[in-house]
Each structure stands twice: as structure tokens, then as C-alpha cells.
Length: 443
Image (cartoon, rainbow, N blue to C red; front, side, top):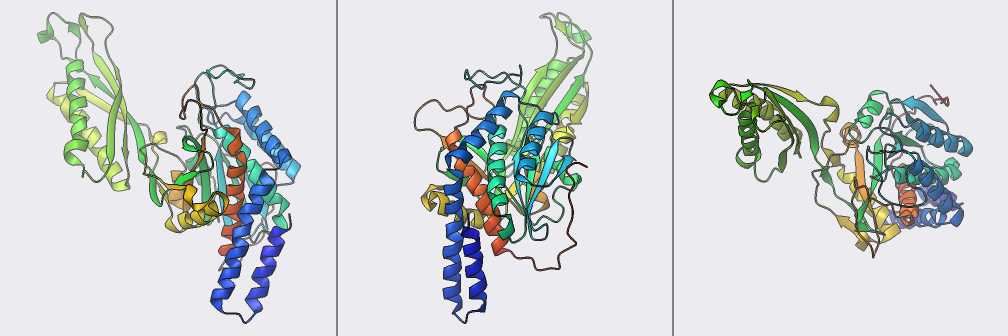
């Protein structure tokens, strides 16, 4: 493809021509608008489409859980080697970070998560999981395939990139906080912005959904052990009943949202685990409860955490019990918030590929996403890529019947490549470039 050379020529010529600013911007907009369309045309080629589908199906058959994605990582590295793309490995145990372009600023990143879920696939098809009890039920296999598709197109135009595209293949999104580990190990060093997509069966194919500001909530999990004194249920006066205490705790926790939170500040506290006792006539010594809490601001999230611990401990004490509260620190995700400028950039690029009428401004959702660690550190943009077919049942992510509509792959690959390429063109570095870095295949 020579379209990037054409774009760059226009940019260069007009920087020296004495034309009015408005005329210059108009031509630049025309040139920029052509980039996404050419990427989409390239990604729809049968050989590119078949290649992405084949990669996705290989990963789907051999799915791996968080921090265990060794074969998935090996496949990614093999494809990067074939394309001549340098990378760093390992990052966060199984993660891979690839580099395309000048090796100099500006740097823009594209992210795909790699891990599967611990559940049995119930979809009967040729490429069903070969690993019992594990399934790609959230589309991460598709995310990897589309990012590799984008990498192929970007590498084909590497000499025309006005900076460096960083490819983030991330482990352990499903509760393992893989983004945080990658961040701690320097995966986003020098990176100015990052983009990521997630497939969804709730939005029609050919459409995308996102929003500026918070798009998914901060989230965390907690568990509490409430200790009392067990005994025979017929003589409760000789016991200290932890079941009664736990029941009062659960009711009191619901008041945190209904009576302490601002009604305009969405929050959730849900108890989804209650374990205690094993007989109809025996009061147990202890009860274990557990749940999740969510909020759309850091302040509200921290306040909820503090009050959850206080309510459990003090309400248990009222019932003569004592309680130990444990928060799973690895499950704590911050608010995933989209940068407003990057959202506008996304709208322009997606509009050129799909049409502006096919961009949905969605409501924020209470689900958690560890891309939030990236978007908390640097400007980020997260969006949903529709893959809903016109007919057939819709099964959302984390369902054993979840299916990926592979026809969406050209859109995802083209969006990735276009977002990165146009970002580099529109955001030239304003500082002296650091020395070029040479990357080894493995660290």
C-alpha cells in the first residue's frame, strides 16, 4: 500500500505552500479520511481475513487462563517473527510488547488481552476447546487476532509511520490484574496514548460504542468471616449465632448505597456468597460471606471500601460475634475513563470506516475492566466493537454459549491500525527524541 506515502506528501508540500490555513486543513482532513478506508480495504482481502480467522481458531482451541498463556504467547511471538516485528518478552510472565515504526517518539499503544475463562464450552463446533474446563468466553482470542491483523498492516507501512506503534499483548485481564503488572514492568514507558477494543454481541456488526469519561466502574471483591459460637439449634441461648449476625450485616451493607451514597453517584454493593453450616439443627461456629463493590469515582470507591469494613465489623459486634474482613487487592480495578480528546479522535476515525450514524454513545457500565490501569496512567480510549448478527440468539460474554462473529475482524483490525497511524500523524513529538532502543526477542 502506497496511500501513506501519498498522505505524507500532501502534509509535506502544504507545510511549505503559502495557502490559507483553512485550505491546508481541508486537504489534510481529506488525506486523513482516506487512511481508515484503505486499511479497511486491505483487511478485507481474503488472505488477510483467512489468516486472522485461523489465528483466532488456534487460540480458541488451546485456551489458557491468566498468567498461563504460554502457548498463546508463543504463537504471537512466532507471528511477529514472521512479520519482522521486534518485541520484548516476557512482560508480566507471558505478555508480549511489540514495536513498529521509527523506534522514536511519539509512541502510541494498541492493546489486546489474551486469557481465557475457567468454564466449560457448550458450543458444539469444529474448533471447540480442546482443554476441559477452559473457554474463550469473552472474545480475547478475537482481540489477539485483530491486533495481529493490524500489526501486519502497520508493518507493511512501517517506513511511513511518523513515530512508533507499541503492541500490547496482555495476560490475565480476567481478575488477574495483568495490566497493572505490565505497567509496573514498564510496558508503557514513553507511551503517549493507548487504545483498546472489546467485542460485544449486544451491538450490531458494523457499529461501535463508547463514550468520553468513565466507561466502566472501579471494582473490588471482599470476603468476611464472622465468628460466633456454635451449638444445637434447639438451645440457641447457649450459642452466639453467626448466621443471624451475617444476615444483619448483609441488610446493613445495602444501606451504604440507599442511604449514604449520592443518588446521582452510581454505586453497587452486592453479596453473592454465603457459606455456613451443614445441618438443619446445628448452628455453626462461623459464616463466610463475600461480594463485590463498584463505583464511578475513586473517592466513592475508597469510601465504600472503608464503610464495608466498618459495617461488617461493628454489626457483627452488635450480635456478639467478631469479624475478619479481607479485600482481594489483586481484584481492585480503578475507574476506566476515556480521555475526551482521544474519544473525539476515535469518533473521527470510526466515522470514516463505519459512518458516523453507526457510532453509539453508550451509558457507563458497572462491569470492571483492567484496561483502567492503563487509562489511569496515560490518556486512553476503550471502545466496544459490535458483532451482533441479525438472526440467532445473543449470548453475552462469560456465557458457555458465547460465540464470536468472525466477520467483524476486518473492522477491528482496520480501526486499530487507523487509530494509531492517524494519531501519530496528528501528534508529532514536541520534544527531543531519546536514543533509539534496540529490542531483543526475549529478555
